[in-house]
Every structure is written in C-alpha cells, then in structure tokens.
Image 1 (tube, rainbow, N blue to C red):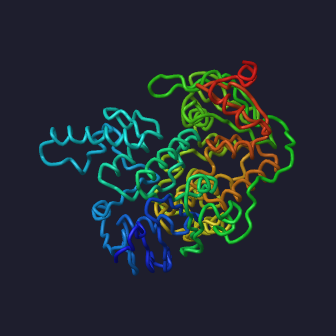
Image 2: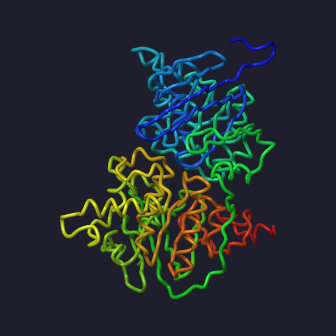
Image 3: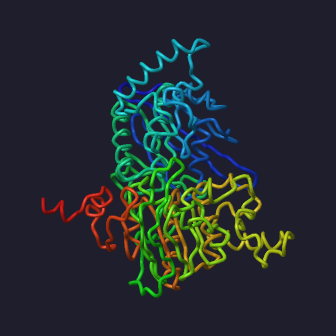
Length: 517
C-alpha cells in the first residue's frame, strides 16, 4: 500500500481485530486508524478491551482474527521483540523496571550491544544523553530506580522505548501514579515527542486529560469500538455518555454533612520509615461520624505512612489513635485484625501489594481479612458455597467485570481489582473507613458509583478518612480538607477553597502570606 504524495499512511490501522478469552469476548471486530504524528486517546470503562487491544499491538496476545498495519503495511506481531522491531514501544501502567539497577542499566537491558558491555555501555550513555536533550527527558543515568520518584521512573520507561527506536509509543494509564505536577510535565514531554514526529496512543479514563492533550479520541464499550471523534469536536459529557452508554453525573451530589461524635482520633502521631526518616511529624486530628475528611498533599509528604500507621500496618514512634474513644496501640499493640474487630476498615493505596493476592481467585480475595466470619464458616472449616455466593453478590452490586468469581484476580483490569477491594471493605459496614486513592485506575462510570457509595456511608453516620492525589476528588468529596507538607499538617480548608490556595498549602506556602507579598 503506497500513500498519495505528501500524505502519510496511518501509523497504526486495526482491521477486524477479534479476541476471545474463553467466554469473554474482549475485542469484537475492532476497526481503527491512528494518524501518524498524532496523540490518539483510547478510552472506555474498565474491562472495555482497551488494554487487550494494545497488548495485541505489542505482541503480548495474538488476535483470533483480523489484521494490523503499521505505516500502511500489514505486519505480524508474535511477541514484544517483533513489536519493537516494528517501531512500537509500550509504557505499562505498572512499570517494568529492575529496581536495584541504574537508569542506564535498565535502558540497556535486552539491548546491550554484544558480549563486551564496555563499548555498549558507552554507546548507550551517549544515546541516552541525546534522547534526554531532544525530548526533555532529563534523568540521572547512574541513579538507582528504587531511589527515583514515580514520575522519573516513568521517564525511564519512555527512554527505554525511544532507545529501542520506537516511532509509536503506547502509554497505558500513564498518570494513574503521578501527582498533578508530574502529569503536567508528562504532557509537555508528549507534546515534544509529537513535534518530533512520534505517534502516541494514550489509554486513560481521565476525560479532562483526553481533552487537554489528544488530537483524536476513540471510545470502546464492552469490547467494541463505538465512536471516534476529533477531540476539538467533542465534549467531556459526550465522551462520558459514549463510554458508559448512559448519562453520567460528572459532579458529586451531596447535602451538607451533619457531623456526630468523634469516631477516629489521632493524637501526636509520629512515624518513621525504614531508614529512620520522620515521615509523619506530631500529627493530630479527629474524624467525626457523618463526615468525610480529606488529606491533600503532594505524594511523598507522609500521607501513605499516616494511613498505614492508623491501619496498624506500620508502627508509630509516638502518639495514639483511638477508634470510638478506645486506644488502638499504634506504637506496638495495633494490628489490622484487631482494628477490623473495632469496626475500622482500610482500602490501601497499593492494591497489588497490600489489598490483593493476585494469584488467588476473586472469591478468595473477597474474604481476605474476614475469613473468620461465622457467615462463611467456623474455625478452620470454610463454606466454599457461602464464600462464592457472597462474592457473586458483590460482583453484581459493584459491576465487577468479567462477572466470574472463579477468575484469578491477576486477570481482572486494574479498575476492577480496585472494585474487588472496595466491595470487600465497604460491605463490612465499618464505623470508620480509611480510603487511599479510591479511584486510581478506575473508569468514569465506576468513579461515579464509588463516590456515591462513599457519600451514602457518610450520610449513614460513618467516619471516612480519604487520601487522594486527585485534588478534584478531595474537593468534591471532603467536608473538611487537611493539608500535609513534609510530614506535618500545615492547614485546614473547606471544599470551597480554590485549587490555587490548596496548591500553595501543599507546597508549604501560606496562601495569606503569598497574597500579601
């Protein structure tokens, strides 16, 4: 196939792509063109088939039928090596980096340039410098991955793809682990890549990001491609309706809070990490029945350690946490099982490391931490039928897809894994709920459901402590906002507080002082 003079063929073309996993029809006769030198968004609910389609493009899966064309030419992609040879690179939602290797070693890995590593290393270092300069991707080549913040780790993934000659770059939920400022920097990088002629496919559920960065956007629903729009010709509202198949409420509808007695009391809490660095410094606050208190702050300022200490996962150096007036013993006697018995539930920020056992079936994860519940068995003897019946009820209520309680949890999309954790903790009807990043990697329809469920819990008299890097989410849900900077609470604000004022507080700056100067 030859393009007309002056007209480039599509960078990517899918023709009739179809893929099944047993009874699950993941991709249904997908037809799509992605123009060369563009940023093309692909959106859809969790389980819509977006990641499956991109995994076929990158060679992780083989389509049951259909054809892929790159630059107008049919290609057969039987693995990631073939995808790389075709000029395709992929940055996964969960990074594929060796944490105790340096940046340079990770970039070279699999492309060392022969048995003699010295010349290959020197050549790679020179190429890495060029890529950093050309694409504004500065990062210390000798830094260890484990010492880098998430935003810089993502840059390393992009550099890896460019180092291997990628002209097409696939990014799967790239801002799911980034702070707002890191996301802004990523978008600047993507614009530079586009200006240099690269083609970018952006898989995301964040519609405002789609509107801000893409040239075109395609919508998938239940395995089908239902629409493609020029971004300039559509709206957030239209895209949300195309994704979900119904009108979606894009704001949180809630009445004013009616706070009751204190359910969670935190007094003088100080927490250190494994290196002995103080991450939470003499923090005190209360959360009352019938209110949502949000913790705002740039990632890495102690919010994660605060949640873990309250949940009994991390031991505090000093201070106390009380649940309904009863001390939990966070300096030594607290543990998650005891806290669950005190009617405190916890949705951890990191669902993979703390919320789920990925090789387990969905129904097994649905009872983690609650396996001694008399409703599902007595002592060491569990009722498998009761466990699966309970799991199926949660699957239906939370619209977990695919609706199979026997499926290994690793085979669910990230958003559906999140719903498994949320359903397990929320359905226990706790008096106190700790929620870390409740909608990370979750699509817009599920976000609406989760937000509504949290507000219903608040209105039922539950005390909710919410940590989120999504400032819009904090402002929409929280009745009070506490701001953390460098491990300390630096201020309290109401949900009506502007984003700029909160941003200054998150940077450790007093908005009043800034306005006066």
